[in-house]
Length: 291
Image (cartoon, rainbow, N blue to C red; front, top):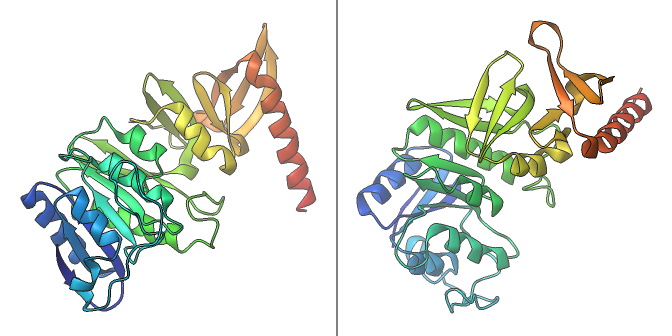
């Protein structure tokens, strides 16, 4: 295990079994002024030792404390209930425990590090977000993309205790969209509605554009429910504050989302009609109560 250290800032752990990729990740992290200490591990076992504090003393010349916590069945190791590491940047495909399995080991911790996956493969994003990853970065890494991820981490960690990992209406999530080697950061607040397209979802934004992301609609429904999004159809998730009309059309209901030239009319399935009406009523009552 090696480390680079400057006073203050985040303590980050980079994990990758490919040494050139590990060195590049560590270099980019160390170049960001918000990062204080960069620790490196080329396998899951070493990473767990660092998280447990057994090797963290090598970087800080302090005394390590034997970990207190549960024995993880995947590793046979006792996992500490807390760690000095703030963020773990993980490759996914590694020999032995892969990155996803390693991240699951953190679930027994009382205070868990934030997790960001760094991989050359885009087919595990859903799995990554389902276990609570803050971000999913594709190789080759770009400094600006890594910087945006660190910003998101800092915002998440600065949330009041008990709210970290849970979106707040005032916390505008940013969704990274990869297109032809360029990463565009789409604010959640700009999304009018989301359309299911197989294992992907298409984000329709207020400026009339759309962006395809490899996240199923069901995952976005769960993540965004508490910030005003509601499922209206097996294929559609809409931003409730942007719904301007609900009306009967033929044998079913439709909603109008947005205004002006960029408005859209979307079908509402029978099974989702009641929930949509209830959410609209609650939103109206809440708006009046705040006046």
